[in-house]
Image 1 (cartoon, rainbow, N blue to C red):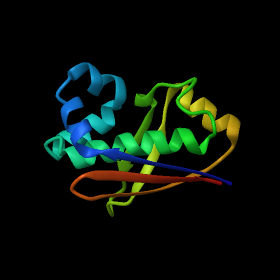
Image 2 (tube, one colour):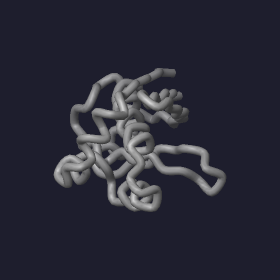
Image 3 (tube, rainbow, N blue to C red):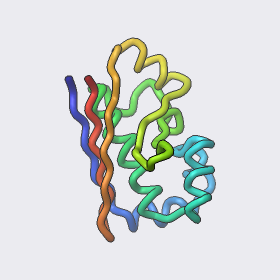
Image 4 (cartoon, rainbow, N blue to C red):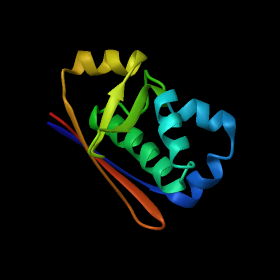
Length: 118
């Protein structure tokens, strides 16, 4: 079992998501759709970013060998968060053989994500 955690300043992400290149490089199409339905609320975008960083820590490699937009933070019909993988990130997940559980939270200033790989 491995653990990854990350905290992001919401103000930093709020500025970054104004840049289309940043959005396309960091967020998957599914995340962009979900964030768009929420009017790109900075807390939600920051939680997605923190989730990607926490995932990279949980696999022990950091952000190497995959693109951030290959890791998606999505929500099921009850609103519970889950991670979805594509491309190289999906390959890494298959190689590692882990399942992933995630928890996210935020305040007015910070978003935090915790990923457990088991």
